[in-house]
Length: 244
Image (cartoon, rainbow, N blue to C red; front, top):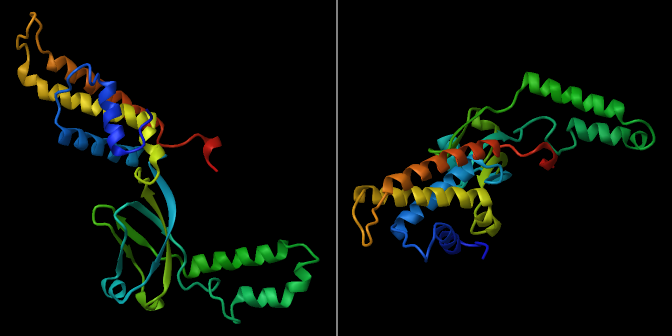
């Protein structure tokens, strides 16, 4: 059965290790810990583990006082913000874009758009050089987005658009649970934990003359984990033809 939830994912990984034919000597809490560890690695190093989003945030009085914005917990990075208070972003009748469109509307429908495009590009360049964009700082552990600007240019209730990356919630997008690389990595981590649990019983005799060999199990799993981490690095950027 293809896993489609956390419960079925855990059982799927344990069956890959031999359950129920073989007793897997690992506590359920340890399985949960290893799954969480696998998910964190998946979010950070697999291109399907996070997605680019545009967050809409309405400025509050608290934001203006603190001079930072608190982002949701599922955000892993904030990389940009739409220009704030730029001359080209206003929508009143004195806006340059509005005036050009008003005066040249009929001309623009019958002649080349190149002059209009050149003019707007030049105005955008001037604004970038003379005004610039608002610098931002973000640390995922603090989960605070600092905007190094004069907060006088915004008012309470203003909407800001933040370009950020958020993790894929597998409880919402259940196909993530069936990602083969995630399954293999979580299984290897569980196997490593299993070996770690059995190391203290090394060479303990069992019925029939068999002996525990937890160290071998642990070493094999550790090698698998390292190999899979290399695969994650190779999958951190999608193929060019998959970028749309």
